[in-house]
Length: 209
Length: 209
DNA sequence: GACCCTCTACCGTAAACAGGGGGATTTTTG
DNA sequence: CAAAAATCCCCCTGTTTACGGTAGAGGGTC
Image 1 (cartoon, rainbow over the protein chains, first blue to last red):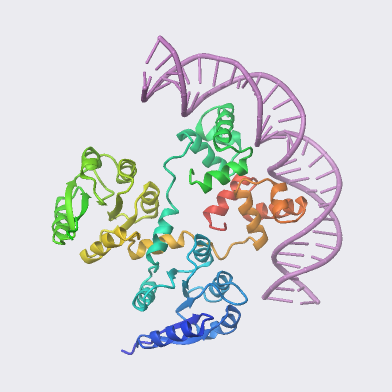
Image 2 (spheres, rainbow over the protein chains, first blue to last red; image 1 turned 60 degrees about the horizontal axis):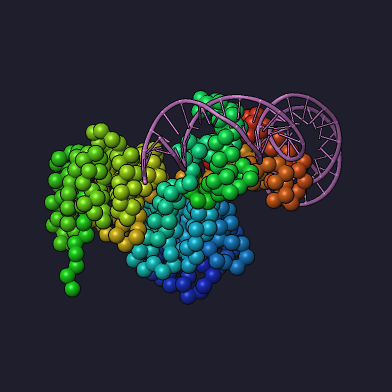
């Protein structure tokens, strides 16, 4: 049985890095770099015929941003596994990448062997994440333990954040609408806000909800 | 320089698994299993004096659920790294565990070497996740690509979900309030709903936003 | 026992908002 | 070019919000 090598594309504007990755990956017989690009625009023109299984993608590119590029590539090739390889590991970049459809995110500082492991992992249906990224992701699920809000207030703010009206919340919590009004007044005082939108913003930002 | 072994606790009601883990971990000189428990209640009575760096935790336990237990342990020992090792890798269990404060989640099927790697990883500030879990987590960030909503409508629904009023949304998008009303009308039609709360619910559930 | 917090409930009001109907134009994009 | 998306405008009514006070019952703590 002859195994067809896994097809890989690279989108990276730094020539040295791009060629380095190419040489590295092509040195593994089960992988084959079908094409490399220096911008998303260029990639989008050819990627359908390349039909890669994996795309290594930088975020800082001339022209269209990498984030935008991920979304467009995913639209053309929904099955492609896009792994972001970037210097910028700030929360914004990371979550927006996943949002756009990235299957993995590795800091550019990763070793060559980690990069190859990442490609393996994504092909096995995993999601390669470098250490700091995985911790960041997990933390995004965690609540702030020292919220100023009481248990009930938190519950009310949650429902408020689901777009529900006072009456609806009252019905769902089996209390009087007036009670909800009081809770919300107290929430506003505790959070130092004067509107629903601000309360939700502060609540989300501080992970009270 | 003598390194103090990393202290580890195990909460697991299956005797064979619990002792297996203990023997495995104690075979590594840098680790030391300080205590093992068969329930959260038992663990909570002693864990403060154990002061473990890492806790391996099952979810299916007699008495208090593992999820509840994670939260309570984190309250007593905020610095402890809790790694869930469970058979149940359904979305609910996974996300509730992170929510409660778990730093990692491994399917019980993991090999011993993966388990030890996981302990290493969590001590280095990472978040050990088995393959299927990491993919599940990443997918939770991803939008549904075949949303019926246009780009602008999606943007409007997002802001609506942030608790913003029509006028506020109009200001932020630099368009007239009437435009927002039209968008919302169209969103309601497309989603087949008649209220803000329903639209947000459907939008979130289907990952349109 | 005094004190604080939480949860509950009530009254009232002015201003803002939501949701529903209609129609119309321009810009983008396949 | 035609379709889809995005923009803007008018009408209307009933609901909601945000804010001001007040207050009792129950829990926990000092």
